Image (cartoon, rainbow, N blue to C red; front, side, top):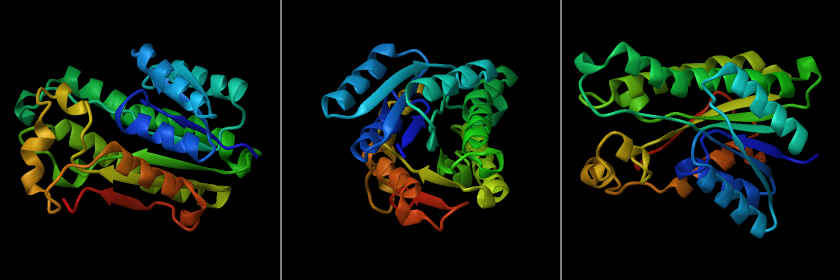
Length: 248
């Protein structure tokens, strides 16, 4: 059976690193993106040049109709989905909770929480043995912010990742006897472009001293953890969390 993986928000950062590693593990890869078609197509070309199979599909995964279309494209172009990585995530300018507007909160939760629910729904409908599926694996990308709180910076982002943690626990229990494993990776301070969205591109470098290992992480280190949770070596793990954070 061909392994088919969908990775949301995968044109850059952790998602892109995961796509490249998944392709090396033999997965046919769907790279999902919102706006940066050029980056997504370049990543597809890199995978194909190495002998892999990849497609890029534009979709707003916070939109229910777009998510349904995204999964239909995977069905038609790659085949039966066997793995989902919910990776997409946003944060906004750092501030205190008292400065967070309802509109900002809705934007963050739509991308960081609602998209995970919508994508999990579509994946479970395809994977569950209760509906004729052959099983599968889901990995949610959360953050150590879920347990640290991100005070004075991104309490809304941290809260959204706390919701991802709870989703992981609940869904893992719902589908454990339907052939689906649901696990979670919580990255710490990782060198990706997301920090520029918060107005501080050098945030990881500034905070490295608070990390017990005294350095930020690389997207490839998170990708390694994700592929472990997708692979046979974690066959008895569901509802499990891996903190990849240098001890933070």
